[in-house]
Image (cartoon, rainbow, N blue to C red; front, top):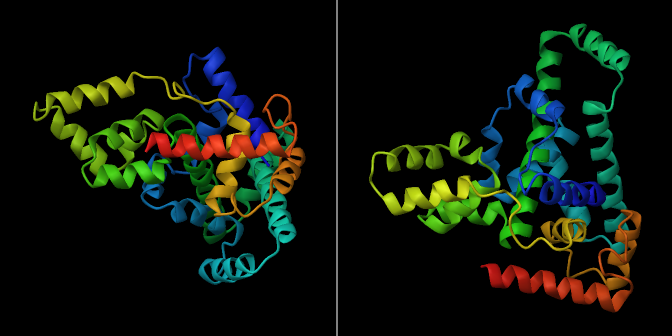
Length: 281
């Protein structure tokens, strides 16, 4: 799983960048070159859209049928099978990230030559795959970051904002500023407010924009990443403490650093995670 890397990244954002999130230049360049821009923010309207991006990357052909089949299998699967699925999916995602970024100049040149040798239709298909992978990376990261900072995911905050919840609007844009330019409702609302329609609302937006992304109550970012991943499949309460510890060990989380030395500690951390979500809503 990517929990250790995400946890270390979030900790670094807080300690070395005063809470501001900045993605790797290679990632931003890839987003720009594939034409994804900020349109991925529309996935926050429904969490299934985020995972839909991942499924379209993994199963570019017959996505709908593949998703239905996988969903049916996982509903009936044992805990061991679910664990195996998580590990395999994480491995595939890591491999996809490696393909995007961890290449030598020679390997990049070879990939470019292979891409140029493709037909126009094949090039379009490869670009769409890359767009879906990048959309998932950005949306999943910010969605989880929002959970750790606000106790609510962007897939909760954005729908609330669309219903007129101003606080949800402000919390959402603190986490991902691209929402202000990539989502029509947020973009139009922000433009309208600058005409002086609601000064208090505009002031709240400007305050959130100037507030660091991770200025919140993140305590165990890597562990919460694991919890959020399981929770996204509605599995967090299905797995035993022992099984979750196995996942954490597989993800190479430091038990002492995350205060999960044994099953009792893991149960306490899970309770805290749930309480944090309730208090933040």
